[in-house]
Image 1 (cartoon, chains in turn orange, purple):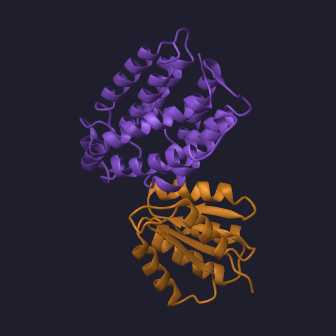
Image 2 (image 1 turned 90 degrees about the vertical axis):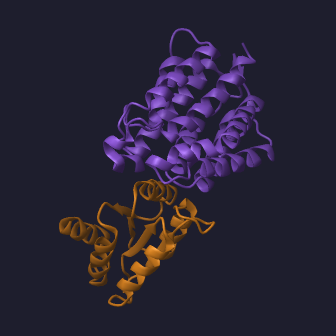
Length: 123
Length: 205
C-alpha cells in the first residue's frame, strides 16, 4: 500500500532525527524524510534539502510538511513551489505532535486531504 | 538613466562589499533581538551570489537577478534567504525582456520585489522587518522626481525609524516590547543593498 509521505523540517538536524525515531517506534511503513539544519551542518534550513526530502517521502499520494519556526516555513513554501508536480501541504501544527498524528493517520491508508484535516482538527 | 547587465552586476558587487565590511555590525544588531547570525548569513549569501554572476555572461539584467536570487536562497540561511531570494526572483520576473532597465522598469522590479517580500513573510509596513525599508524605496522610486542622494536620505530615515517600532514578525517578535530601541538587522542589510543601488545610479546621473 502507498502512504501519504511526511517531511520534518527543523533548524536543527537533532530535532528531526529524534522526532523521526519517536514516530518510527510505532509507525514503520509511512515514508518519513527529514531536512534538519543547513547543508553546512549549521542551525538553519535549506531549500534544496527540503526539496530532496519531499521527493524522497512522496510515493504518489502527496506529502505533508511539518516545520519548527517561521523561516523553515518560508523555505518549505519555496520548496513546494519548485516541485509543482508533487501534491504538498504545509501544516500549521506543532511539529512533534502534529507529525505524530499525521503518521498514525497516514498509516491507516488515508488520502492527503484526510490526513491533513485530521491533524488540523486535532490542534 | 538606464541600467544594463554590468550595472546590475556592479550593484551586487557593491552591496557585497558593504555587507562584508559591516558583517560584524549586522550580526551584533541581530544578537539582542534575533539569533545573532544575520551578518554571517548575508556575507555568505552575497559572496556566493557575486561569485556566481561574475563567472557567467548575460544578455539582460533579469538573468543576473535570477541567478543572484537562487544563490541567496540556497546560501543565506535564516529567514533572510527565502525573503531576499523571493524579492530578487520577483524582481527578475518583473523586468524580464528588457536589455536595459529604465527608471520606470527598475521601479516596477523593486515594487514586485516588495510584493514578494510581503507575501513570503506575510508581513506589512511597521512590523520591524525589511519591508520597512523596501516600502519607502518603492514609494520614492515610483514618485515624481528621482535623485540618488534622495534615495539615500529615504533609506537612512527608514533605518533609523526601525528602532522605534515593535517587532510583530520574525524572530524578534518573541521579544515583543523589548524589541523597541533596537535597529532591525534586516532593515540594516536592506539599507546597504539600496545604498549600493543609489551609488550605481549616481554614476549615471
